[in-house]
Image (cartoon, rainbow, N blue to C red; front, side, top):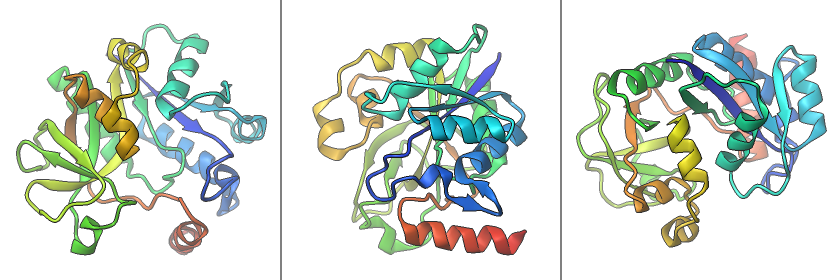
Length: 243
């Protein structure tokens, strides 16, 4: 089985416009994510972006990029367009990596890919253990409830995704990395947005509302996503210190 990693990216994020090209250690955030994807060594890597500046930066740094429409409602629509525009016909699995998580653990990407293949799953994602109870109430941290407790070697189904919860049972911090079988990705983008999805602003609810199983793999930790200037400065400090 072959996997293709596609990283959706755009300049017009509401909370931090232009974030893909913010620099850490002299490289743009989107290039850091591309490097992590390449290090995972599970297949070709493509950045899918609606902005020429992102495409130019990614290509300048030696990665593949495809210009997509700026009309997409979701990142999944963007990766589907990039898949169709790419000349890659033999990919069985499509991995959707977030373009704003340069600290993602490559081993988590590898493990998710392995579990997808081993279990012949149609849709898989990542989640990590919630270490701070305050995060249960934080609406910016998406939670996933799983059928069974998440451990290193299992791949249980997601029961629900939510933004806040008072309960700790089988609830984890959802990390927005998705791996689709090619046929499921095609099916998913042609489904209408569900009421649940719109109300909660969570695209993954569209799958559950249409009886599509999502399997969940345990991630080592929650990477810091870059949503605000504070996130960027905090991550920059950590990554530059490590360097």
